[in-house]
Length: 274
Image 1 (tube, rainbow, N blue to C red):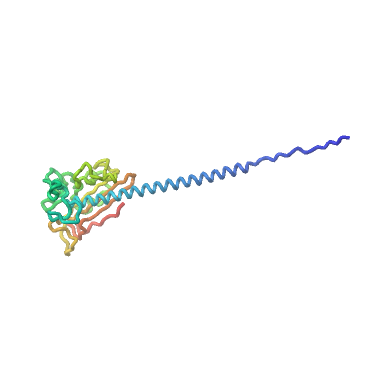
Image 2 (image 1 turned 120 degrees about the vertical axis):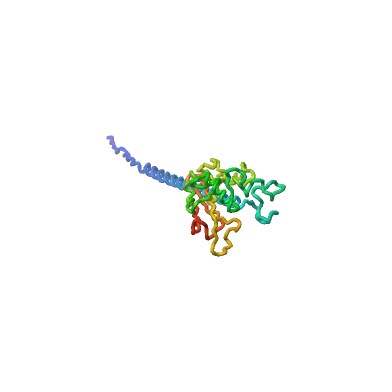
């Protein structure tokens, strides 16, 4: 007799997809980590770029202040030895290389006093009045021209950097008056000083303005008082705009720092760089 044995068919377990979900979660977490790393890297690059741009603008502003000092004094470095004309530094506009201590005809310091409607830094009370007339005729409201301003009060140009549309064309650029070769001021190392947009540009450029004030004489005999032959105080403001939008450095300086200025009894207070 034949006996038949019946076997139960093999049971197939249904897959629940746990492995697939696990892989997808891992991929999602990995993607989140990568994206976070990318954002951090991008943020670091932006911060580094902004820091570099600010440093570049700060260096340009410092250079503009030094350039303004040369412009005011009418003498260029080196200042280590007394020249043949009994002054430190060489004339800003020497007549020639052979006669470096002789000033080019018509120039007063770095400025061509002989040119019509051109301001210069005064050496006498008559000069001050003449310069005042020139800058006032050029700009009745701002009383500025070519980086020289004769404001009525100390507060007239307290915020030059906030009015660049008006003030930029009235400012002086780096090397504009202090270099022999005006077309090549030698500022290739800092593009801000090149001011590619020109004097009226309000981007990627730098300027300085020198405000002139009569010195009335302090009560004490301070050694910081200006030269009696040139009783003037100069407030210099340098503004440099970086290559990135929003980068701006403002550096003010008072030369010399005295305690009494006409038209106001308060000493100008320098602003922090912004």
